[in-house]
Amino acid sequence: MRRFPLLALLLFSLFFSNITARVQAQSLRALKHEIATLCSPTMAGRGYVAKGAERAARHIARRFREMGLQPLAADSSYFQPYTFPVVSFPDSVLVSIKDDDLDPGVDFLVDAASSSYRAHRQRVQRVNVGRYKDSSQWITQKRYFNEHKIYLLEGTDSLCKLLHIRPRQLAAQLPKSCYIIPIKGKMTWTVATHTIPATVLYIQDSVLPKRLRRMNVGIHSEWLPAFKTANVVGMIRGTAVPDSFIALTAHYDHLGRMGWDATFPGASDNASGTATLLQLAQYFAQHPQRYSLLFMAFSGEEAGLLGSTFFVEHPLVPLANIRFLLNIDIMGNAEEGITVVNATSFPKEFALLDTLNKKESQLPQIRSRSQAPISDHFPFSKVNVPAFFIYSNGGQGYYHDVFDKPATLKLTNVDKVMDLVKRFISALQ
Ligand SMILES: [Zn+2]
Image (spheres, protein in one colour):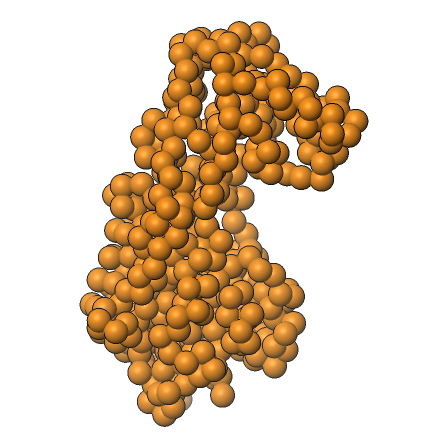
């Protein structure tokens, strides 16, 4: 008889730990599914080719509607439209040496601001730009560059050091023609909101033959002066103080596609954060909180925090009524926990996060970092909206490249991060 309560307790706890494990497995499956959708070929890297970003925005709005989130825009939609200028590479991005096509995104990248260039069996001239002793020498030399040759620039590292600039800034100074800048190691692409006169190819040193006399280049870049895009915003009304808000944000855009073949899926950056945002929206739709909750999926982040900046300049709720904002960007693997950017500006909220984690959520570590203008929390910080930016620690190092694919995300501890965010939001006074 005396053993019975103990046995019952054991069975009871087993039953519930089983449920928790099942719920966790379910939410992980849902997260994976969402990431796979956002990284699917139809979304074309959520950028500027094949309506990639637009398709992602529509998908997020559809999910908001399914969950019953309240729209905030004047036309009762979830979209906050705006435009920005951008360079896109919709089709031909061809580089071939001795009739072998190089693999775009793997063997080479086109500078994101490049102009178009097309030449068949064009002569290649090596130029050692590393020999310049001062920048005036470099400026005189630039006059020799003309459109009828492709220039393979050697020694760009020392020239960049001399001029105190990065390779991309060097590319911006080049006159109209085609240039090769050899690269060793990781290639990182980006988005440009301006064009440069030159066409600059960053090619892996290992695929450049010692003797390179001629090559074929066909780069088609398209200047879009007013690319149409939208932030996607939904709300869950608060039960006690509905006119005050806690905002959860994540950017859904990525780099898109470079030509026909090189897609940048952006699984970690930031399909992972967008999927996390959607999972949290789903939970809170069933569990409304004291404050109203804003869910904001921004576009234009990779082009320079443009979506969040637009929202701050055209807010759909009074910015002064935002009690706190949590931005999630890169949530692919929290094996080593998370880092909180801007933690030092809000020690009380950081302490709350840390205490909740130690007591309940059990992430291995929460690192505190000072302010940095590196994601969508920053435009809000500039207008004094209290904000944290959370990213996960433990990724594979794929960033802004063609290898940032769903299969490389472990998603370890991401359920714990979501648990922590839920507890933090409920506890926030
Ligand atoms: Zn990002």
